Image (cartoon, rainbow, N blue to C red; front, top):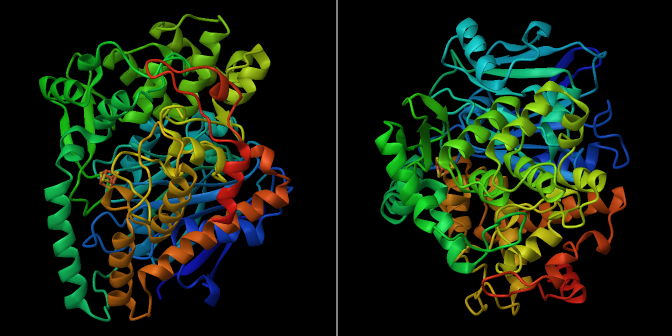
Length: 573
Ligand code: SF4
């Protein structure tokens, strides 16, 4: 199998390359990052101290765009937001270039003296660690432009904005896409603060001079599988291609699980104004871009580019999660206002989900009103300005709720919920409760059509029956897909893992089956849970906030009625 580990110690600015240990051979992406966190990071360490490590790893086929959607990048560390393990993954072009450089994982450890900032450059000839104090206080947009002016446009950039520099727990990490925009985010769990604590403002990945020739165990079979799957994705993912992830607005409205006004209502009144179709029409009218691939070789192309009233670039990508949390959850439904809020979050490097949930808490506390878009913009500016209020907001929804005495905080393990109210999407509710990552939809979201690993489960999102099993299956499948480096929009079923196994075999000649991949997913979840156990997490941390069990959610008057005892069975499945 390919690749080495590149290890960088920011305490002494030294780096070295080492072989991937044999027991890590079948791991990439999340499987790799979580294994390193478990084996190398002291569970009780301060997340922003020298002993934490941040690991970046592409998937096992990250250097071959022919394998559709195989270029996700995972980042892992101990999270400053949850205190537990965190893996976040994103699209963009960085994983592809890292893999082309023969790097299976980049492990960054140690810590430089305060106020020393650096730029890492990974290239064919090795690693450079360059001083970068002049780049501080730049937002991601300007930073990327400046770096590309100096280093050319055929590179990928991983970077942090002001929130990461200030070590805020809601800080994200930006990754550039195929249009060279910082539009993709390793968003959740405050990993931007961990990168900031290592004194790293940006990582440049330059694959110039790397040979294109690859060796295959069975190239013909590899190409055949890729061709067939690409054709299937083009035919079956047309809704996602046309509307992007905003197609989920209608699905969630139908289930009644949209997060509206700090999770008080499950639907919106005027769906036609906020639907995927409304966004599609707006993007077209303004001369934006519908449907492009965030990474090379994606046939689904769910990314979009949204222009402002003056037809100038405002933000990419306009996504369901960001729109729901920064918009609907704050009572704001106007695309331009939410697009601007999203742009600010991208620029300052703030997780849009955590930020939207935090602003809604401030609205609940009475600092501003639901629907106050101008006020929401000011709240984000407080973070950039580093005011006392900005420092509180920067710590996310759980801390902000405590500071302002709000008891309706939609968080689990200190992390804000993504855009599915668990009362009307109970499978996702179980995932929010039990995922080692906190309330994370990417850990196992029970969207319509996702049936897990069996055919006999009750999939009605309002019915509590079988939802623990469903969540368990989805979390396992996703952990396996995240380890392979594939985007889960390209398939999240047992047969998808079988196809991925065949591709790995055709590339490397190793004997691997779909079942082996599923077992890797299970092991990864166990590793993550074990790390959290060592930190001190117990069953009590696998619970939703009380109000979800008590307050009925209109319009279906649902409550989350899966008992703690039932939830705890998850770990025996
Ligand atoms: S489906 Fe969307 S998120 Fe996934 S690789 Fe393609 S553009 Fe990126």
